[in-house]
Amino acid sequence: MCQTRMNFRSSIKSRIVIGFLAFSTLLTSLFAISSLSIRQRLQNDLIAQTIQEDLDSYMLKLSLNPNLISEEQVSTNIEAFITTPAKLHLDLPAHYADLTEGTHVLNEGNKTYIVAVNKRHRLNNQPVWGFIKNDISHIDSSSQPLILVFTAMFLVFLLLAYVLAIYVSKRALKPLSKLAAILETLDADTHLEPLAPQFHDDEVGQVARALDKYAEKLTDYVIRDKEFNADVSHELRTPLTVIRSTVELIKSNPKITDKELDRVKRIERAVKQSTELTETLLLLAREERKEHPGHERTQPGMIIKNIIDGFEPTLKLKPVKTKITENDWLQVKAPESVVSVVLSNLIGNAIKYTTEGTVHIILNKNSVTVQDEGIGVTESELPKLFDRHYRVGKSNSKGSGLGLAIVKRLCDLYNWDIEIKRNNTTGLSATLTFN
Image 1 (cartoon, rainbow, N blue to C red):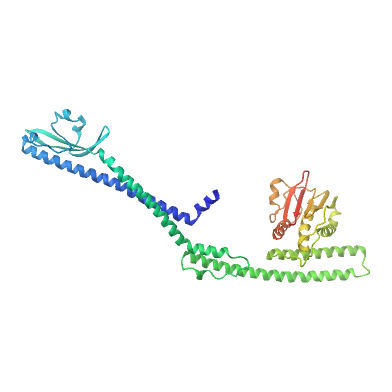
Image 2 (cartoon, one colour):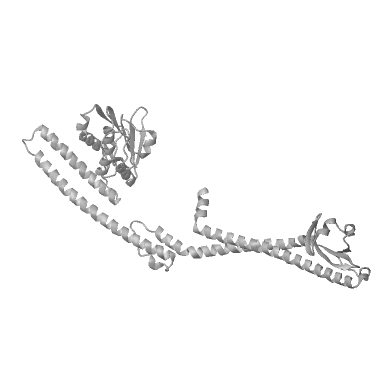
């Protein structure tokens, strides 16, 4: 659920929709607020101007005709006061005396008034002040219907903005979606046609042209890599074949001694291991699985015995023994060379890192387990054992750190499982499961 929300927020389509909605919200809100503010301001200004003109007109008439007070009413529905500075407190609050000429907005209790003030006329050589109070409290309540209208308009505009955003995003992202769909259908065996001619000369077209250039470079690299692998395969097999035939010739010599024959057999095993390793590395380079023809099977039990024979000179130099336990008869549908490389690395590491004790190899129905009594590793080092060039920190032995990395790649290629865990006492157990 969280991942879905994260994908939505980070998608280009969602950004377009959110951008449209944010812009529409901001624009509509500003329009509504400014409209209400301007309406109230204009209404107040109009009222103020009207009552001010009424007051000024009346005060002018009063200055010309002193008897007008008892003859004419100032206005209807408006409080009007004609007074003097001495009598102001009888009609109005005292702070009205401080009001200047013009109009003012005053709050008194729970009401709001616009007050027009005129103080520039005199009557019988005495100053006369005129005030008109217009209650505008009802204006706030009259604004509520308008607020409801603006709210409805806001929701409508927001809905229209969302629909428009969906439409625009689909139109804008259609070429990009088309490019993604084409790329998703590609695999290692697909012949990639140029992408650029399928798109307009826009941003997506630029991406398509860049992908075409990258694909061209990558194709050239893969072709050169395959040609190099084929050349290396041929060049390595030739000297190994020469060595193998020479070994056979030496072994056929009736005058060869037992000691010399033992050394020649060691050379023969090394040639066989080199041939298997060369073939396996070429499979990894091409990421190809080589299956046995027909119903042939590889027997790991026989391979393990040959591997241990190859490590015999190393085992003679330290107090380390090997033990093989066959709980079940095991056959694997895989090339002998691949199985040999994997098991050679697992058994070779067990022998290398065991200074004394026993290397126990257990064959089950569909797995092989190699247990050693070596130096072991810490719990934090276990996930790093399959990393390229990683070597156990406590070990002083020489090596490139590629053995287990090759094992992991071969297991991934053939869908095998490989697990290494710590033993209860010392050393490690590596379990190879054939699926």
